[in-house]
Length: 137
Image (cartoon, rainbow, N blue to C red; front, top):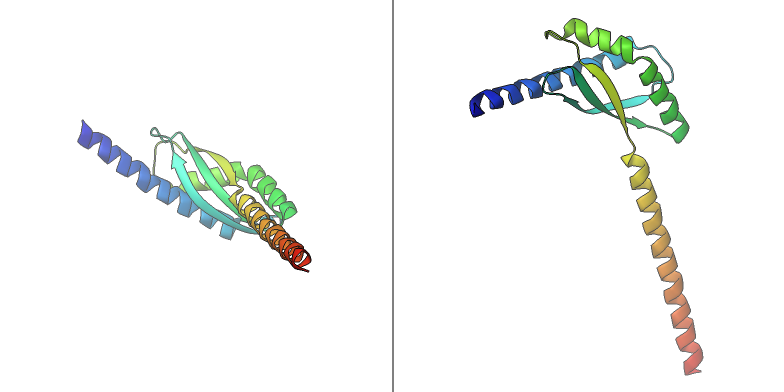
């Protein structure tokens, strides 16, 4: 039983990799939507029965560009799913659910907070040195 489950898991992983490749190709070669800029398919996680798959996507650009690209990909989901189904050799074509990665936004926010903290720290340090000089005089 454990061996059969392991084989099934390997099969799902292999199909996930194939779906990722196929989606990338469809976006790159067949979608002609100018709203779709720099899009990266990060990961595909299909369910064990391969009826659904979460597609993790990262979109590079400004917030407006990302919003446009997310909307365009959501609208093109049916077309992408159909094209994947034509090349995927499985009984069912998984229903694709796009999950948009916003870690770029989070990373930018963290970097800004760190810079702000360093700036405030150096200002406070300057204030302390000035205060010490005033005390010594």
